[in-house]
Length: 409
Picture 1 (cartoon, rainbow, N blue to C red):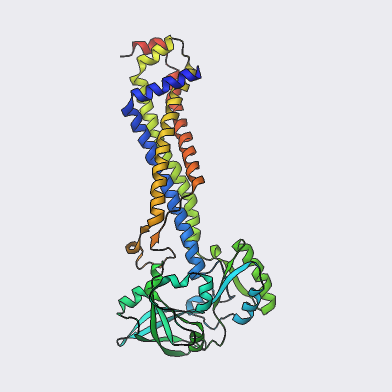
Picture 2: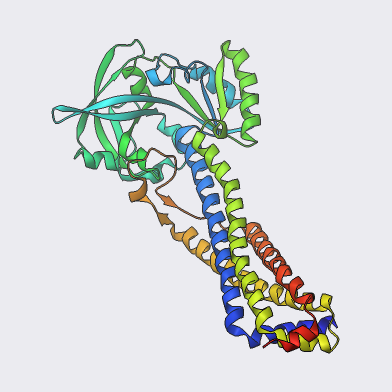
């Protein structure tokens, strides 16, 4: 009997092609949208994590315990002992790479005026081990240690009409709370994936920045890459370093530092609910069309009832029709969504104009991240929700008396 119901269900679907196509398209669009939406959120989350780890916080960040409290006052006197931290981290098997940095606000003295910029003092030999820093060089080269040279963001250079070979005087306050100036030669232009890094930042050798800011051999922060869970690694490093240095340190994992990353994680769960809404919205089309089917096929329902098809069998018939339409529609939707995701995952979506002027740790070009398991879950979920939606009108059809249905015109 089940095989007979399946045959009848397929016959009804093919006989009412326009109605079946409408229901299938609704499910396909909903499934496609959810697959792509989840891929975008995952791509955005992975992209932000990568940028935070590489350019902003590392997977684990080490700072003076008081730095965050006074950060808005530019407390470059609140440093950490780089040499002793270097020796301690070198002995840890869970640490894969680490770099010292000094982040400081400054001003460029160009064409008789001051222009705000943010400087980063970096050990470029270590930066090469920490990340693929050289890949960000658009033109020129990386500054040499011990020389008054700088690498500048390409957008900042364009805005100030600067190029390779130009010399710029930078002005900033020192660790002793005085003012100092130093002239640096531009030897490279950088094109980082994050828009703000190109429009606001410049990089200079760590030793020259330490001399400029009167910081001796100390740094403001150490960014660390680890093998294990970031939070566990941060706690272990903190327990190791604080007794060694004899002072409190602010050591946190990147996902406990960035508020925006927390929002992205929260948004991922919110989008799950949005996905449910899309599927339910698509399912209403099935409910509506199935209800229409009931009224259009009253005489057929009456005939089937007169031939001995009971209420439960009618329910199964309409349910099977919904399952087949949902399965085909969801399959088409997830395949199209996966195809769009894979294509854009290779070429990316360019948000350069939208993100210009926004200080956000998200790249200007976003790459959706395809996940096979997520796609399969969306497919199964789409079929289950959409098929279940047919139970409402199916139960209504099962209660119709054959005599009443045969009278229906």
